[in-house]
Length: 210
Image (cartoon, rainbow, N blue to C red; front, side):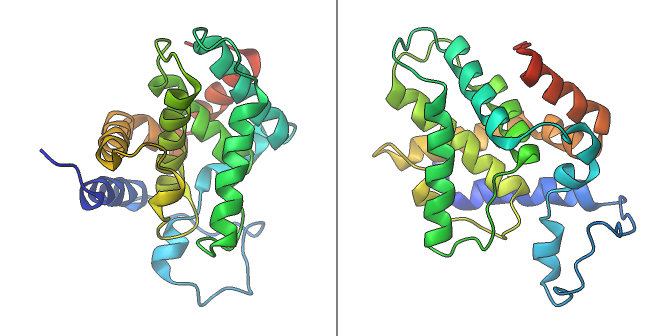
């Protein structure tokens, strides 16, 4: 059966409804932005609450350090790729983020400590130790990155072309749908539970790759 963008977006929209249903919280004085009251409601619902709600757990976790730790994790997981450097995944993330900014697909950088932790959680449960080439890892990694952007990014939507590496676009959409459905519960938990978020960031910092 063909997997289309509409299928993936349907899954993402369903998860957004789960996140917002019955969980209305008063706006924190620290996060209130009086300069943007006219932002569309759909866009405001896309604000990444992990970066706000769980700030206490990432106070001392600098984003470059976390990206480096994600790179080290991928080097440990993908032992069949001999020449992989821990800096490469960080370069991939920054390249996509810059391309989206230049294309005006986003007005602020997606990269922060909270989003890196979320990305690590997806990679940990998605990237296989059987990955044997940088090209294959790049494709899987960018799919995890796309799901992260689509699920928690501040914009309503992101152009997928910046995340697709292979000629067969169908493979990308199939992978994205698989990640979205398989990780649905964990994505919800890390978004609403400070203890879950704390455990994931602890696993990343302590190199506990279970």
